[in-house]
Length: 456
Image (cartoon, rainbow, N blue to C red; front, side):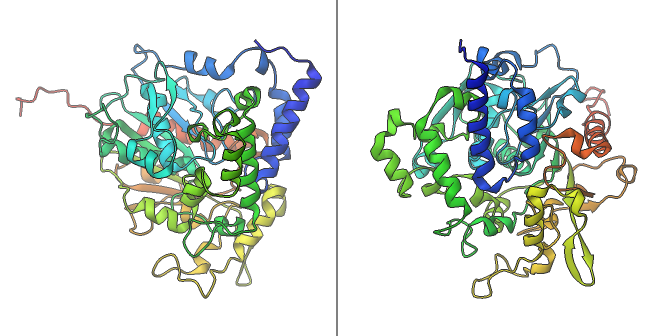
């Protein structure tokens, strides 16, 4: 049990929140989050909130009358137990009695996070797969869940998934893995283990912001030599190498399987990582390559929309057309730390000397945005092949829901309006999450035959 003075706790809080604020240009966290952190510190270091979430967060076998709703965080996100008990989904998980909020790697690749999510639910030791692990240069096995949070999960006990930002792609990759029976020792998995997928500001088709922050538009894999992402890379490597357990309990970027700790890597290992010769950034096994348009195309080429699963998407937008120009729609309605990004994304031009990411690409289609993602990217899978979809103005227009179709709405809001700080979203917060939870409970279900098979 850790015992620290209030001053020591405040210093730790300040250090971690400052690091996360600085890295990636305040991508998710903001001054509003910093204020919330102070309120959420409570007894962080007097018990292990993370271990408590693993022990106490499971849904009992007897609670199988309703499928659980799993909320999957996005980039720089966190699950239950991190950041002193702060809720990434701003308390939305309290709207239903059967909600799980997994803690996945905040900067790890979509592939790695999908593997982590499976074992979080089923239990056991995370297996990243032998082939992938060798190709990327990290350990094949990761965190151990002695008991899964929903161990009865199968086709008869399916799950509703809600993903914010990159969390939406994590869910889609996981469902494809289930369909492909990609988990060793689980030969009975199928796409029908997923009952519904809800994307909230989901990174379905990539974002031009990745290029603004430093990804190379030529390939969508490598970084520019001097850019914001290089600062991020340096900070994450040093943070993981220092490997202070107290800080790791507070916040973890998720690269433990890369063994970058000073205990395992040593000083030469640190230098090797910083020089770009090893580690997740050298392997390209982290989230930003997956968020480029090219990276999303590579993912989407292998991801299906399945006929027995319900799909719904909320695409956020903080821009409007003014005299033929795309501009921020409401200065006061955009978080101040996202306003510049909204403006930059409105003006993005793909370099003329670089081949476009796909045939038919047009800059103007990508100008509407929410400060982190382009609105066109969030509606439904579009590239390289457009999936069945339907635009929705009112929820009543799409009832009864049909599986296998991406229903989508356009919502006025920036990228972090519906996470972390509930007060900022106001009444919209309840309207959005109430509609999501109501859809999961009342409109997305599979009819089970009640007559014996031999009765016609």
